Image 1 (cartoon, rainbow, N blue to C red):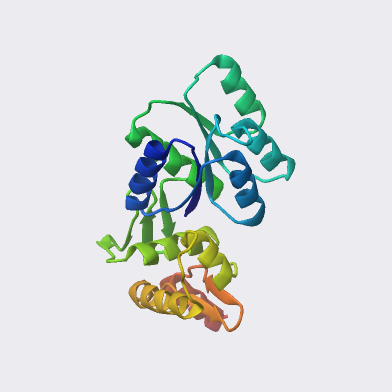
Image 2 (cartoon, one colour):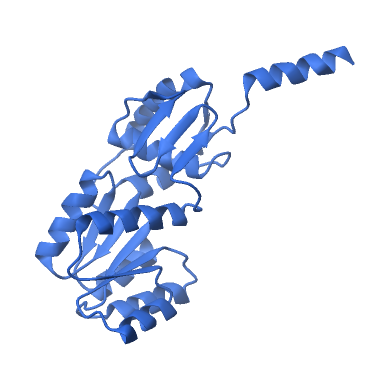
Length: 237
């Protein structure tokens, strides 16, 4: 999951960036509203963490422009001035959540998890795909209750593919959601990560299809036992 953090307080921005990266998120940080608006216009993100008191363009104006483009990107607002009027303005403009400074990092991380789940279609904290379970809170995966040893990059790929089961995901989309600015990840590297992930989940009968030149698709899971029973029933007719 890729997050844009728009925060002009360098100390707070550095702390949030380190904390969220340790939780497995890709974080891009801007320090003024104009840069935030430009990034949101030209790049794809899974969440915006937006300070209202930004220089060059206010956070509320960034939010207004984002929603005017009909973007459904989840937005978490941060502000040092926690007034009812500001909360109402932010929520009326389309913010999804609101936090007043100072705040506990653990609470912010919990709200980030909730908003990224909502942006991916909501649902429970544990996503199930046949025998595969993915815990979006603990960021861990298992097959038949056996924990999979996945790297942070492999977990990120799995998260993206699970959110788009049965749909084609291009290499460019994978890079956009996995990588921060300045982080070079080649198509060959994506192929290697997919290969490693595929080997680890295929033991559970879960398949990632490669559509040459286009991208990857996580197949909808078909229970082999039910499939065999269906074939047998057809043969008896």
